[in-house]
Length: 317
Ligand SMILES: Nc1ncnc2c1ncn2[C@@H]1O[C@H](COP(=O)(O)OP(=O)(O)OP(=O)(O)O)[C@@H](O)[C@H]1O
Image (cartoon, rainbow, N blue to C red; front, side, top):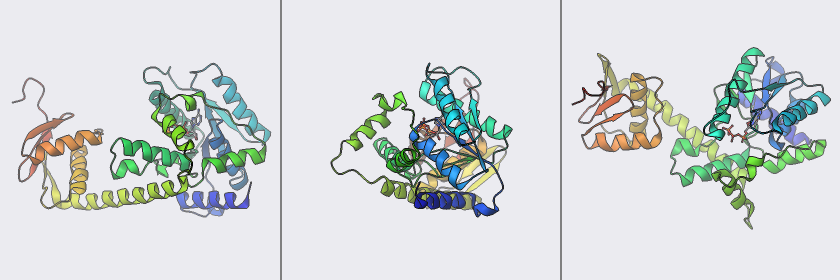
């Protein structure tokens, strides 16, 4: 392990926690799958955060080898005197396996962090993940938020390896003599990410993942700045009366209007998480002065836009 890796990791953690590590007396939970990325995360933490972290690995119970893989992670930890808990989803995973497994994994990790009093859960997303994510999102027409890719922090989840490349993380495992588990889904070409990864690997002049990670970080800052501005515009452009909301669209740049519309929708329906495409369609309709519905909300265009709960079906005029 090089001193540069250790100091980069330390700086990342201190930036995220916003406190020098010497003054931090919390406990961090590490999510370790047994792949090279998260084993490197564990090795970095072993050097930089001694006594300040614990490890969990999730056995999704989807493959027969998964139980042995979880035990392997626990064994690598035990060899270094580290505690590792093996977690399971609280119910069987069905349907869209990848997204259900992800949801079950994060739920299990959050329950574990509560139980074991971890303020933070660190995952091993890295710069190559950022490059792949940006390319996938470009191909889907994402805007500023989507192109920000994976965020350094999302609630309790933190990602302190976004400025490390996959090659660097593999070199950390190699230097420690730790072999990683190969995830078979990484070869499944049904997944966009796998096809993009293969295409990137086939390039004669590879793209620089660290440059992509910098772009993602810049876009994440731009996205936060737009949210900040939209929250301030809320006071002057959104008003509520009798369970209805009025939004004044006058002179607002389209990106701020889009964010204010989302804020207004969530003011009426706090759990509502409309997708970007649905908001775009709604904006087109209301800008033309039409009435359109989204979720359980009816929106009417005009000089000021009116948003209110949609009447029950059968009663709509
Ligand atoms: N089975 C697991 N047990 C513990 N941690 C895991 C497990 N699988 C993934 N992780 C954590 O999540 C990180 C990202 O893993 P991966 O890229 O496979 O996730 P994903 O399915 O793309 O979902 P997401 O990016 O939303 O987390 C890993 O580096 C690791 O920290």
